[in-house]
Length: 457
Image (cartoon, rainbow, N blue to C red; front, side, top):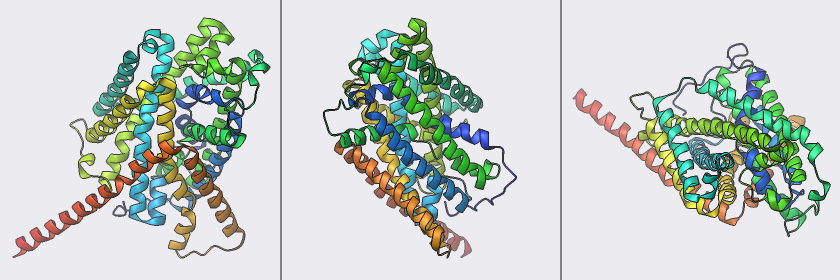
């Protein structure tokens, strides 16, 4: 990455304004999570709202941190660029590696959520596990093949699906209050554990819904006045998403008893059915299918682009930087979605909700390392540039960085021992790959030098 010239910052060029950047942040965060998380959170009871509030606060701190980093580092790439700038090439590799893991594990989670809502529309998919598994794999590989061939209309598809998925969520979060049964909110803590444990566990699950909060920082070279637009868009986007998440979850828990909500593979469709009858359930399920399909398409695209870009930067193996005859990163797409498919197959036997919970926690664990490193990146970047902060500015950077780092570590621990162990193994698996890539690059340079000397002689 350091071999490439950095783009100059400009305050006038670019195609993305504030509204477009807010849509990018909201669209990337609100995907499959909110459509299945009410079922995941039901066993905790209404105390899970405390997890949402805590996660929302942590996400807001991270949003402010990423907004500040976008002013300090002008080059595109988001967390990858900030980490590399602050801590060097190895940190950049680990962040790229963790982000890639989060993408293909996220792909698996979104496919599982898609199956849940298709099962509401076509019950046989939910009733026969093998049909559900086959549907998830067909969805992943259909979009993989489409992305390998290249789809110019992908951007338009994403805009349309973002608008359509917000409609049922807003209807449930606002009109749903008229169908709430207060008895469903008792007891407040239904987890059988302490309030602190319940909130911590719920918060770890809810962080999945905020992955993507850094979206506006990635295409910074195409943003109008990025130093102003990116921080505002990121913070406003997180606030909008938080309002949607908390209202929808609170209404869902009030409309349906915990024992019903907790086992539903399509919880918001079940809520819609109570509110508006069979047609309401079908419309919500259709909205969820559109949303998850759009998210799956976006995740599939990124699961190829991230390793492809890292390979061009000589951070990932060179084979992932090769293009197909269609001009797309076919090798990267295929590898990413082979791994996503394996993850689905290994966990599908647990049931839809259990498989979704495990996979999203794995994606969260992979994302928390980038968040933790970026939380303290600004101090290092300024020090590397010879700038020594003092007074209020130093206090602001230290407090924000400390809060972001502590939150990331706390959420990492709250993800559970099994998930943390597997996530840590996946992250550590990248270390020998980094060594191999660097060795291969050094060997290529040595061979080129030898050839130059030979030709000179």
